[in-house]
Length: 594
Image (cartoon, rainbow, N blue to C red; front, side):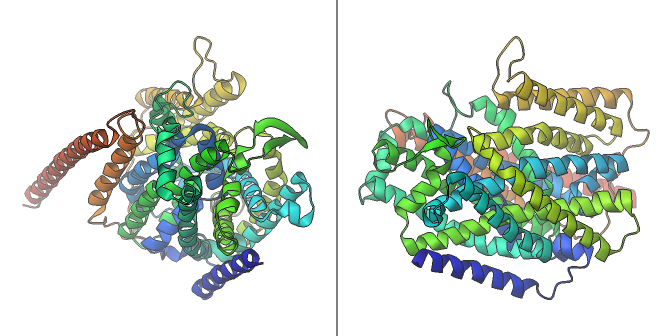
């Protein structure tokens, strides 16, 4: 009863505060509905970015990967901090300067109207097939595990998943369809704070249980029993993410996700200024580094508890029959139920429910934006009013929800929820990102280069991974290596096209003056701090640190100190070069004035 009451209280509180914050907003206006009237503060942007990403498919999926493979899988989270820095300095200034509402709109400015339509259709595929169903399924298995819905209602596992998928889909749809982006972003910020508090309690209480009521003893078990599970570098032959995969695959995929994914970038586009947006993005980067404590560490703790017979993880069920494979996908909810008290479990469930709704709402809202602004107003009715455009977006949002509810339960047949989601998305995310990157790097690359690049990129990855099973004929490669190969292949092909058929005149990005694009003064300092934290973290969780057989602390201090010194030297060099460039620009401008 305490679990249910705390769940209902926190969920109702978030809904009430979101309504109070947005009740006077004009949701019949395109900018007000899709971009929150460009009024979002840095705190709301950071919370919304964090919670949009940190949902059940992250908590359940990434912790399940950590249960199977150890700390190596944290690369998905930690490299996100680096790619958010790229968003803040490379992409956001261009997006906000051009006053865009969607990423395909940026592609239209750069490559023409047809590219906007093509990229919108690709994004629709990504959201409907590669994102929303996974959010629903992961949310269903997580909440069903936390509340023991099967036991309470006397339902089979399959029926329970259907019930939970429908409940999440319908509830999330109400937020996304009737509240607009601001309602989603405000609820994200509140739920994000709750999830951070509750989520960080899970590893603390997990260590307390592992150490038999002694957190210090629990940490000793982590460091001394199977310390290889804390190795994040991916140096072993059987690593889930090999070291080269971090560079060739994870970073590139995260560049797409954080820099060019409509569902993510739309929050940053709703900022009142570039400085406010940069603050929010870099604050979210810090949360991503801290987030490994709730996204990876619990999975490792659950593995140790299971190995000691202190946590019962059931076997995976396929087609209604148990298998001999542990169901790692429910290791996280099983751990939460085991370590949290009932009243806190309800609070955690409410925060988790909000996180699930956040990711689902974000996808639906972004999809509605794409359909309304990039397809309906471009192809069907260019003169449509704001009210009509918003109505079309809401209608398509409902259709999307029904479709995703129908797809979600079929994901249960996958061996790895998180990896399946990433591989499906890799078919389109690397090609889209590479085309956008081309538009940023080259001012003379023609639209033809983008079209050819998209076809080559999507065809290559789909064929080599899903048809040839990562076998290139002369070598068997990791799927993350294919991502890097695909990236280089696309850049090469598009570079050749650009060389053979360059645009007659270089592209010039026009400043629409819809948003103040003065950068945040302390953005460089925040970015270098994040890079330093990233370096220290990987030094610590490597053979040079806690996974070493001897002298761990001394090695960590020595290597971390050296790394920080090199980072500081690099920072000073970059800063001096930056100031020199500004001085030269000012001198040139002064001479031209004279």
